[in-house]
View 1: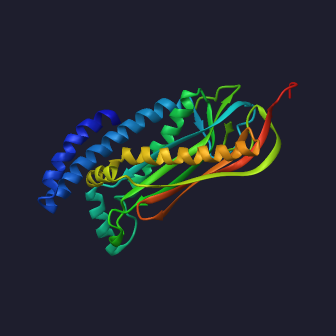
View 2: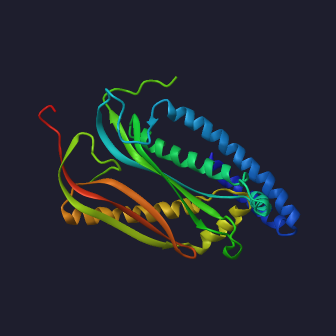
View 3: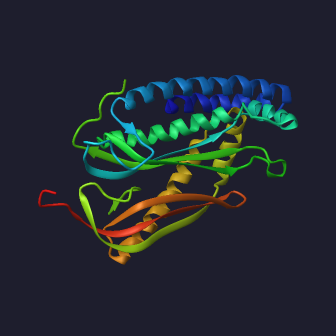
Length: 175
Length: 110
């Protein structure tokens, strides 16, 4: 999904650049439309991959395996993703700062990034033939603000890591 | 070199703990990649260039941690943790640490 959209994204990006800088209204409109398109296709992609890998691997936040399951092999796996927020969402967040409260335009972006990071980790574990990923840790780091003097959200890196474990018995299917 | 973020390694027994192994690196952003990221900041979504850049940096920190563990005579690192810190404008520090240990395979039918 990412490879395909990257090519189309490059062409779109040029268009965006040409139009966006002519007027702030254009910039908001384009950011809203393109940003929403990217978000929707990412959500569909996440759902499909989560369903696929979720049938083979169980993720756990702690170390201990369920009773009766013995680990035979373990190796560390990780997944990372850097996400940016679109201009329209940043615009909404700016208004939100006037009245306070939850910034609903930005929190879904980080949720999506976490799902992506966890999935990348799981796919790495899946390639090794693991049944469980235990002791998963999630870490978020803001790596840049677009304009530091105005304290706007720019990019954040989300990282997921854990230990992929092969077990003697396959995990019981989830209800 | 075995590496896990749990306290034990399945199928192996820890025979000796050698102490903390750590590795870090500080990376600055690339100007070309920054340009592309600026564009991506309009429409949002994943910034692939930075994902790669940070993964590279983290792998560097990991390999330094492994080198230190090897120098101690370890053959595995357990309880590995990561941390990321922004140390200055457009540069980030990647830090990896864990316990260097010597393990041997579990044998003689548990």
